[in-house]
Image (cartoon, rainbow, N blue to C red; front, side):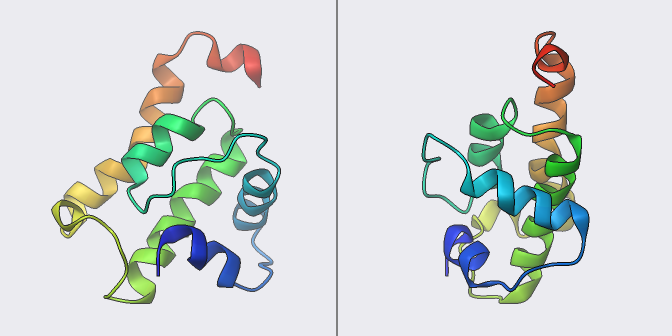
Length: 104
């Protein structure tokens, strides 16, 4: 199951970060690349998400990785350090973009 299928498969969440990301994801006007690589999705989403939605993005990827060992996370993200760096890329992109705060 890829990340997109996982998001559509999951039930409604009480966690505000998780639910805010799902709502933002479903409202996207442009379809992101169909991938389970958080680095690729981070580059596509970083300007489209606020801080709460960003936290939700990171939480969803942690759940996705832990949900099923047969998921489609890239093999080079198997170890925790690499995985954590990959899901934190979105924050790095937001912090390094001087226009990001203007969007929010």
